[in-house]
Length: 151
Image 1 (tube, helix red, strand yellow):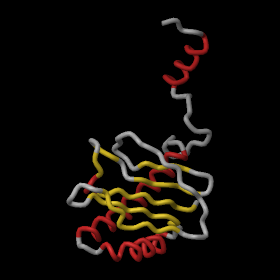
Image 2 (cartoon, one colour; image 1 turned 120 degrees about the vertical axis):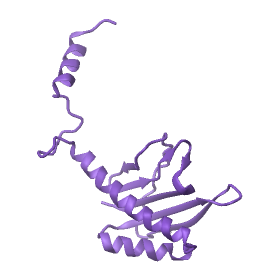
Image 3 (cartoon, rainbow, N blue to C red; image 1 turned 90 degrees about the horizontal axis):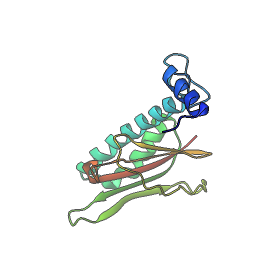
């Protein structure tokens, strides 16, 4: 492999810790601001997911809409779209909640993510979308959740 001056400079910068993935970096722990924000959204998603899973396991699917509204009010975040699907005993995916705010006209992108250990976070211009992650080709508890939060 032939190394050019540019590739050597980039390699040295990466090794020296000078190469940044973001223009803005938090002062406290040198973590890019976008990663800190993603962690915040992932936590919101995990908290919401725990409420959803508990409701589904207690056969309270009819309450998912009010659970979503209460969670949004509690966190102060505007969840303008929530889609919850689960795998039924016959092996088919069934939507148990699709809730959208008619005042928000944002079309969420369809993204086919690879398996991952963390929640998928997609940043749009006016929203952040958080979506279940697949591990070993399946969703945890056979439940898939996607929420869109207004920035």
